[in-house]
Amino acid sequence: MGGPGSGPAERAPETGPPEVGESLRSLLLEVHRARAAQVEEQAGRGATAQTLLPVRRATLEALENYNVALRLRGWPTPPQMRLDIQLLRSLCGVTRP
Image: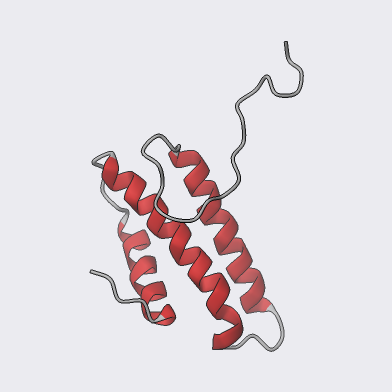
């Protein structure tokens, strides 16, 4: 009791759409991690559109995974998140409805 492995297992971030049972908390944590990495990259010297593309794509993927999980639960996407997804899709050259 109380030893290693007795608490909830932490999962490594995955790519692709979220599983139905995946917690919103873990998905939101991934959004925060991706956004922090993007901010850090943008603050770096010599940041260009090309150097920012991988972190922008990671942020977009995290936001879209969270958005899918919200929709699976019948919850609305926050307006600012919807705008962030649209902006990142545009910056990354991704065309989706």
